[in-house]
Amino acid sequence: MPTPQFMFAGYPTAPVFKTKGGKSNIRELLWGDWVQLTGDRDGEWVPVSVRGTKGWMKQADLQTARCLEIIFLDVGQGDGCLMITPDDKHVLIDAGISDNMLRFLRWRYAGFKNKWTFDAAIITHPDQDHYGGFQDIFEEPNVFFRSLYHNGIVERNADDTLGPSETDGGVKYLTEIIRTEEELDRLLSHAANRGKKLYPKLLHTAFTSGRVDDIRALATADDYVPGYGADKHVRLKILGPVLEPKSGRARLRWFPKTLGSTSWDVGKTKNGHSVVLRLEYGHLRLLFGGDLNSPAEMFLLNQYAGGAREEAALVAAGRTVFGCDVAKCCHHGSADFTETFLKTVLPAAVVISSGDEESHAHPRSDTLGTIGLYGRPPRPLIFSTELSRSGRERESTAVLKKIAVLRQQLAKAPSIEKVRELLPLYDAQVDELKKRNITVYGAINLRSDGKRVVMAYRLEEDRVNGSRLAEWDIYRLESNASGRLEYVT
Image (cartoon, rainbow, N blue to C red; front, side):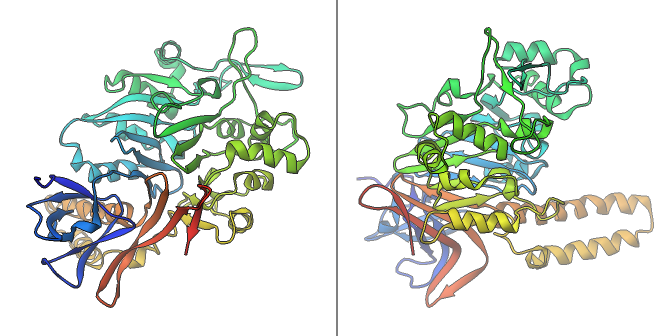
């Protein structure tokens, strides 16, 4: 039987050796990594090429089945992740505020030298630290999307920045929810409605680019993200936003500044109506919570709790909907959360996406403590995109030295011509430094076959234990007899 052209690294990691029969590995691959086979099997050994490294692997350390792969990227202050399904669909969920996501994608997809089509992009809500990074992506000429989804709240250049509202029964509601591509076109085709606001500019860029096939809003009335429904292996159940229609009009309620207040707040409303998704794959349940806040959490719990009022009943009812094995922490680990919602989610692992050069001090210490307190016992896991890399002082020494030399040369440049000659070299080294920090050290990786989960981040320095080289700090969740995923120490 001929050897296949490629396979995938086995569970939970797989070593690559320089020579057939080698004792000390030269690389450590994470479960599900793509491996090119460069020749026929020789006994228990197979020649391979992976990420520019040629070597040998044992056949037992390879598998033919592809894993679900989710990469929570270090996009600074904000959220951004890439999901790749076992049937090779690629989905972006948020993209941070800057070009970090684009830099990562260029690294991942060979610089987009050829046309690449993502199955979907999901903007959970119109906060710049979630959508800003999409601007450069939508302008990339070789990047295409089959679908772009948003939460239906589209800012516009007007006194009512979120559109018209009405008050009904003491509750204020947004009454112009942009659900369809046609409604979006009617709003944004007028330049005056866009003004200088970044979010309408972004959506207009996507709409007019010719590279996005369909743009629409998601809400719980849709049940599942199209193409990821109940009949699929990987499902994306929509848990928010919840529309409250009246007289045939879609409405979303305003949320207050604080729980119980009637001081309606633009930021809380945009965040509180994040697109909330529950990923389902085999035994795995993963919650993408957007930027939910305290008023939104309690609103959603009450929507699903069937009239329960006591906390214990609310938690029990809500857990059938929001309970999960892994959760993307809402709002970067801010203090605006309820203990009731955390008790409901009860995750075995939480991923916090936050930046180290921002003024919000996320993740908050009390948030980290509460996540640990109400996580799944006995050892709830907390991952942070910021903390998965230890800081600027540990970055590539060689690149830093080159930057220092070029900086001195620029300072002493005898002419503007010399400055113009040196600047591209300097910029290239800065780009290399930033790319390395983002693509290598700032990502939390999740791999799963629906029965097991590996969560890992890249070690900044390889670790050697005897003859075994380790490049990853890994954590495993495995299904118990009842099918529940548990942390394996």
